Structure formats: C-alpha cells, structure tokens
Image 1 (tube, rainbow, N blue to C red):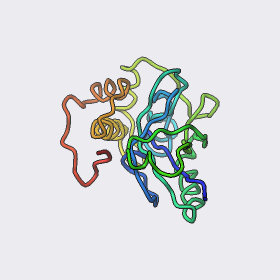
Image 2: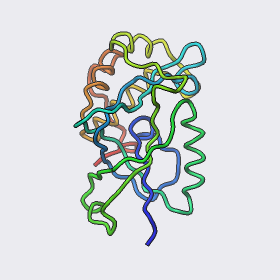
Image 3: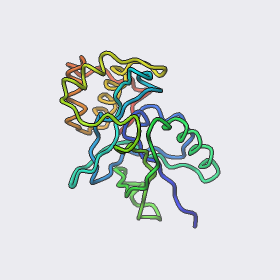
Image 4: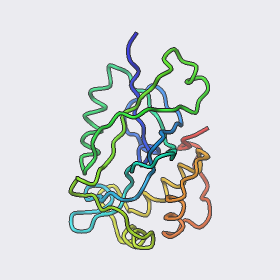
Length: 194
C-alpha cells in the first residue's frame, strides 16, 4: 500500500492551487491560526513595498479550515517543485495532522492522515509579524504585485472561506476593513466547498 500525500492550503491555494491533484476536500488542521503576518514581495507586493499574505501561527485549541489536495505519487515531485518555487518568499514545508470534512474520504482505507503545509516563521526575512488590524488593512490597500492586488487576495480568501462555510474572524475583519462589506456572489465554477 502506498502512502497518501495530501497538501493543505489555507491561503491562495484554496482558490488557485495551480497543480494537478486527484482529490480536493475541505479540511482543517488544529493548533494553528491563520494571520496576515507574512510579507509578500513576489506575489502581492514588491521589494520595498510588501503586501501582506497569510501564514500560520501556533495557537493551542485553534482550528484552521482550508482545502486539502490528494496528489498522485507520480505527480508529487513536480507538484512540490512548483510549490517550492511559488512559496519561495519565506515559506517552508511542514507536516501537520489533517482532518478531512468529507465523509467518503474519511472512510478511506488509510485513516491516519498528515498533510504538507507551507508556513512562514518569524525567522524568514519577509516576516512582518503582528500589527493592529487597521495598519494591516492600510498596507493591504496600498499593495500590488505580479500576482495582483493585495485587496484581491484578501477578498478571494474571504469569499473562499465563506463558500466552505468556514469562519475565520481575522480574515473576516480584515476583509471588512478593505471593502468587503457584504457577501459577493460566488462563481459556481470556482466554488471550493460543498
């Protein structure tokens, strides 16, 4: 029996994985909270004017919802090379226990699951750390990079979490501050959850 390989996305990987996968299932990890504490100089900002994107911080008892992707063994090396490049701005791979929301997947032959997750820790040069939410919002509003505006990133993440039925107070409050005052219609071709 081969080991299942899952990748857990909690930021842009939720709505734009951009890699081949066999299965996509909403899921969560515990003990981690999503925060806009990582600087982005290669996607949602530029050197000297970084945007703010999410990373995970240890938070006992917290549950962070996202999207889990099962990757075929034959595809894994290529997928990880592409993700290592995409997440090169301060992120590193970690293994975390994964909980899937899908009942069918939960009854699969292998019950103990772990997932690869990319997270940025305070020791990377692009780490910005905590700040009052209004300051984070001001930075988001002023930032734009090769992958688009930082506002778009915040709003897409808020919409993706809403479509999954997952609540994240930090994301919701930041989205409200940058202009996400009411739920936007979700495009059914990009819906990420059940």
